[in-house]
Amino acid sequence: MDSRAHDTVTIAEAEAPIAWLPVSAAIASISAVGIALGLGLPLLSFILEREGVSASLIGLNSAVAGIASLAIAPFCTPIAMRFGVADTMLAGAVIAALSAIGFYLAPHFWMWFPLRVTFHGAITLLFVLSEFWINTAAPPSRRGFILGLYATVLSLGFALGPMLFSILGSEGIVPFLVGSAIILASAIPVMMARNESPRLERRSIGPFFKYVYLVPTATAAVFVFGAVESGGFALFPVYSLRIGFTEGDGALLLTMIGLGNVLFQIPIGILSDRVRDRRSLLTLFAVVGLAGALFLPVLSINWWLLAAVLFVWGAVVAGLYTVGLAHLGARLHGGELASANAAFIFCYSIGMMIGPQVLGSSISAMGPHGFAYGLAFFFLIYIALSMGRILIRPAR
Image: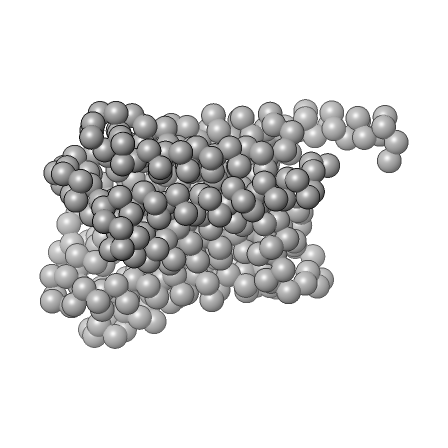
């Protein structure tokens, strides 16, 4: 391709309009699922606690969700190739909605284990294919903005779920019916945009696990985010109590992180559309994450200062997910992008499983501030990887 033709393609991409119907459908669909998850996860834990199930069994039952996500991820693209993206998402919504009701109807606790598998397997299908659809529908020059919008709306959905739980409580079938209805409602926008869903060619796209390391700066970024997010939210209350804050103070600090995440993802997405190489932005976010983690012991003496820093720090760290997903979409297309999106969620799930273990062990070994050093460990790993990639393979 000569330079004039390349310039023409670049201008066409820059001026490409946003296909709002498919983008809105995918975002609305997965955001409804986010609301249902925000409602359902604490609902199930409270019910098991009330019925006298041990903490270890509650944890084991919850861990099945991560195992289900890891198990289904490699099959998301082949299933979508066989049945179509929109139809697979519709089937996933129905399976998840029926599983949600199943938790209420199941007479024995052991039945919750297969229900976790079907529920979270279907939810993983919805996440993978929604993100693939959004990435495919977004114009290259606006991809960061669209994914920032997606991250913002999804975060609001997750925040609304616990609010619904506080209103509905955990008694009776009503919260289960509401959660199931919200999941079924996620199918409505998919049906409206069904004719504009991406099509996947039925051809070989290579083994799934090659996509884990095909765009390593993206998949490693989401691994670190998953580890920091799950480990941080699980163990920050422990950390805040051990350094002298009250439960209320610790909860408000977590709220500050969530607010920063909601307010900054669209600006971060727009910024990623302006940079030449998104890998440099991901590296910068990891450096900010490392600095924030290392300064936690110093900042912990002043609640207001810590809250202000966490407000910005949480937003920047969440940018690893948004910009990592945008970087993935810029590098791959079609079936390869669908498989890479599945690998993206796969790495996120691994991070979610590893993060709490590493941070918990760090606190046990080094005291309260081991929490900060455990966070720093993940960011250091990512900085080393991303800098190596940038030096070995400059932007093209």
